[in-house]
Length: 304
Image 1 (tube, helix red, strand yellow):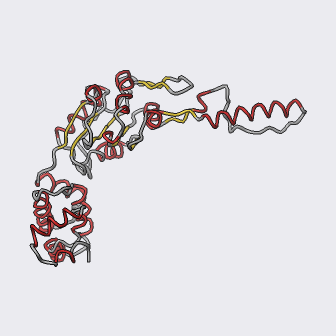
Image 2 (cartoon, one colour):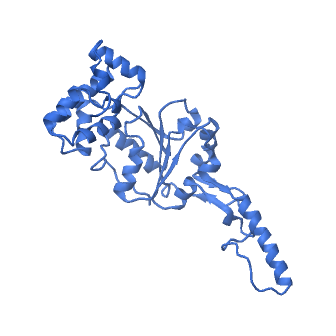
Image 3 (tube, rainbow, N blue to C red):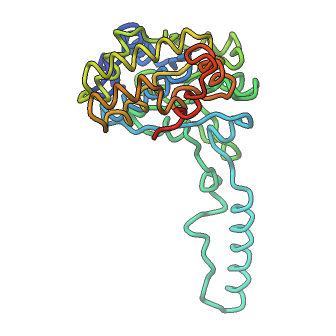
C-alpha cells in the first residue's frame, strides 16, 4: 500500500495546509501533483524533502528542451545488442573449431531483449514500491513530451521499447509523482486534466519568517527582520527578476557568520546584493531607487 501519511512538512520544509492537502489527495488517488509558482518557492523541494523525511526512494527527471519519453521511460541499447549478437556468433565459430575459451557478454542474452532496455527514472520508480518520482520543470520540454505521457498517466503503465515489457502499478502502488512548472509555456489541457493542481503563492512575511527559522534557527530575530524588510522592499521595486525564497535563505546563510550588529550593518549597506538581484538592469534599478546618483552602491554589490 502506498504511503498515505498526511505529510505536513519536515524540520527543514514548511508545507502549508493547502499544499499538504493537495499532495495527500494526489497520493490517495494515484495521480500526479502538478505544482506551479514562482521560481524558488519550494516546488522542487517538496518531493525531495518528503522522500528524505519518510525514507523513500527518490527518482528525479530534470526536464530540458530536448527531453523525450525515451529518456524518461527507457531506451533500447541497439549498440550493445548488436555487439553481443556478434559475440554469440564468434563464440559459436570458436566452438566449432574446438576452442573452449568464450568471449563474454556480461551475462546478457541476445534472446532476452529485456537485457538491453535501459530503464529511465519513470520505469525505475514504477518498479520500486513506495517511491517518489519528481519531474522537474516540465514547462521546459517540447510540447509533445507532456502529450506523450497521457497514456501512462491514465493507465498507470509504461510499455518498454523493443522488449514490449509492460511496467505498471496499481492505484495503491503508484509512486508519489510530483511535477513542477514555472509556466514558461502553458501545458496541454489534457495533461493538466490528469493531475491534481496546486499553485504555490509567494510567502508573506510571517510565513517567510517561519521558513527561515527552519533553515537558520540560530539567526537573531533582529537580523531576520531587517533582512525581510529589505527583501520585500526589493520585491516591490518591479524588478525583472524578483528575489526568491531560495535567495534570502542563501543570503542569511552567509550573513549569520557575523555578529548580529555586523550582520545588520551589512544588510543596511546592501553588501552582497548580488545574492538577491541577478541582472544588470535590476542592479541599476535598485541603485536608482535606493541610492540615486551615489557610486557607493557599486562597491557594495559583492560581499566584503
